[in-house]
Length: 166
Ligand code: FES
Image (cartoon, rainbow, N blue to C red; front, side, top):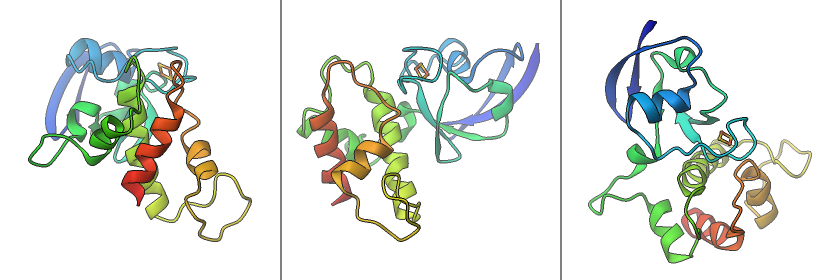
């Protein structure tokens, strides 16, 4: 067993875990944070997306011990404001950006981080240029391509992100 400390959703947590435990399993099984979902468990679907120091990662591919002393944010910690929801969550509701909801926590974490990346001037994911680009539909789709939705709610997800980005 290895003892690690990690800040999760603004609270410092101590975990006593085996060094091979994934961040996803640590969050779900040790900290009872079941917002991040286990879809493929191999980095292909994005259902497990969380933020590590504000950067989106697939928690199923990360070892928890690698993230000791990092700030981890899950969907449970992303909500804010008087309503207790993040504007991206509200936009997903307004635009029907989900059907079964299994991918939704990962989609929202990814979308929030994606807009931060865009605001920071990340180069285009579509066009080979270092110029600042418009956040077009294709650009959003490409930047969100790591998050799959088996229900096919992609149009609603796109509309929700555009709503928040506007
Ligand atoms: Fe992590 Fe699918 S469960 S990418």
